[in-house]
Image 1 (cartoon, rainbow, N blue to C red):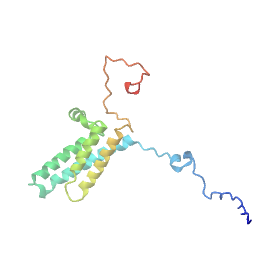
Image 2 (cartoon, helix red, strand yellow):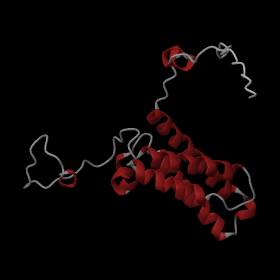
Image 3 (tube, one colour):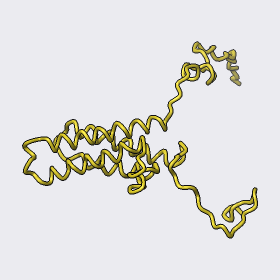
Image 4 (tube, rainbow, N blue to C red):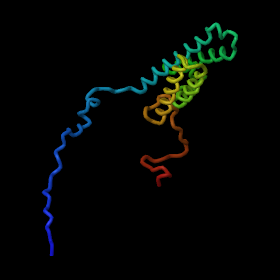
Length: 177
């Protein structure tokens, strides 16, 4: 009988890695640099700059002599000035405007209003006003995302509860029972 024995190959260990293993999170440059972004401050000054930009855009539409007898553009210009002022005042609230327009103070209302006003700026061929519209819509979306809980909203209404119902501390909600 023909029995040939197949020689066994010697086991070769895998080559040593030539790259360095990933560093721990505390050793990365982003962790070493103190790059904290204050999102609430960014949104505060972002709404101020978008509001001032919208006011400037509305003023430029109103002061354009070619729009003098075009009533819809004049209405758009004056409403842009008012809406821009309403958005800009959210950075430094004015009591009178907060009293009569309370929907722009919580982040959800401010985000929806900024998206509404920002989309209204897309009426012309692409230019300065549309760039302000893009930033306003983007900031409005950021306000809506933040209203989901990423940053504490100082203007959100306090949660209401019925005064007659006493819930003991540590009790589970009925949905988890």
